[in-house]
Image 1 (spheres, rainbow, N blue to C red):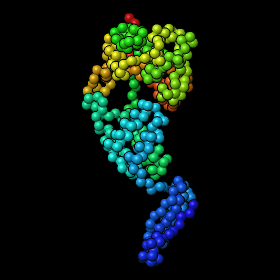
Image 2: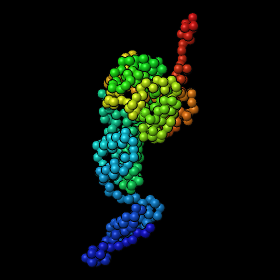
Image 3: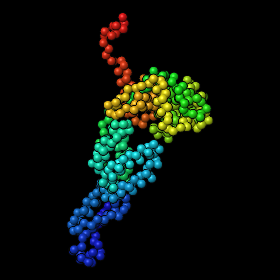
Image 4: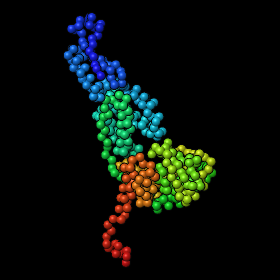
Length: 379
């Protein structure tokens, strides 16, 4: 592709050919006509050769002045609707934090230094729990969404190059895994439940069915709550999780053991969802913690030195059931089968669950026990 030299006709008449500055014109890769006033003819010729070289080699960088606010509006209109509802909310939150902290004006001026400022400020902001700061995992979560948005900006020609991102180092921690003893205790304590109310089944039956379903499928709590009555076959035990309802982004089928089918038959009613919760979402977690309290569950807080503990620190979350499923089944099925069952997009994620199970087993099998204790026990 060629660049060309020219002089402004009016200026040429006013100043004369020798005094009139020279400009360079060219067509960019998007087919848009561009020009730049250079000055002398020799400098214009040099700049024209540079532009021609960039266009020929594919290294041309558009000097775009796209405003961040305009890009954000375009991104919200074209990209966000393609994402899952929760992902849309997460992206909006991340970009709002970035705009609040860094106040970007021009997209092309977003640099690695700006990203580092965002990381530093974000790390020092208050976390959800009293006297805590935003966790490294949350910062990295923000960085993933921010980087995805900037990649789109580059693809649209608004950003010459995506800045380099330095992730915050996260601790490799073992999340809580619900033990079989605690599962049994919580199952037996479901009689204290008063919610969900207004369904055709007692709240205790609903919660017991939820626990059994979760520990035997490994489904995330949102997937469980999204299970439609039409996607459950009580005769064969076949269940379907839909792409729109799971993080794997694909439809997947599984089969429930007969005992599990029997456990959930009693809660299946005439509502669209098997595990219908006709209350505010927050109350689901509150009721789960209340049942655990009745079961005598009181876990040690792993972050007691990092924040002011709340009552929620001492109870299991729903994901502990998913970890429990993985650790209980890691020796019962192959790694690819476990990945399929848990709908992990990346096999690396599955390997982390396998490693978690191995660590727990090794901790139980290889721990040192003083010989005199085992001798005493035998005596």
